[in-house]
Image (cartoon, rainbow, N blue to C red; front, side, top):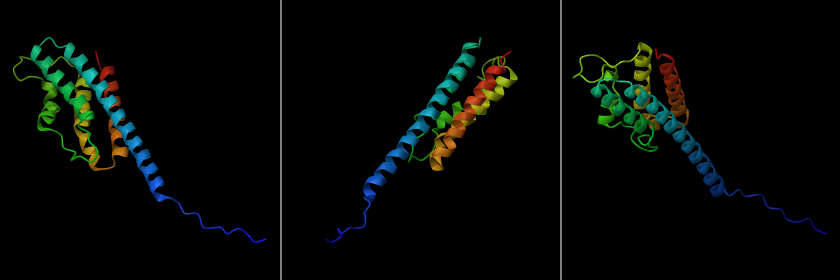
Length: 159
């Protein structure tokens, strides 16, 4: 009786490459969802700040910032994209948010800790689209976690 002929096993690299691609896409989708959720929560907090403002102009500025945070942390993060933040969003996320509208007699009614957290949240949201240019799966979760921490600090700073 002769031994059966055995052939070396040939791996189908196409299937394994497809599987790796699907796994990476799943990981990217999870990271994008996490960042989007952090943006929605941060925007909710900024809307709470807006709701406390007696000055209508300050309320509108903060509401625009909330919308910009949500957008920058969500649909503006485009894997394979250019990582650029639209000029209008960059304006709404600028540090001048703490002074509110220039047409009011006083600044928005925010505690100092809220102001600091607000600037942090805006800066973090503004940087999220650029994460697609680097290591998205490493950078975006760090930005999302820092955003969540800034919101927590801002909530704790309320007088």
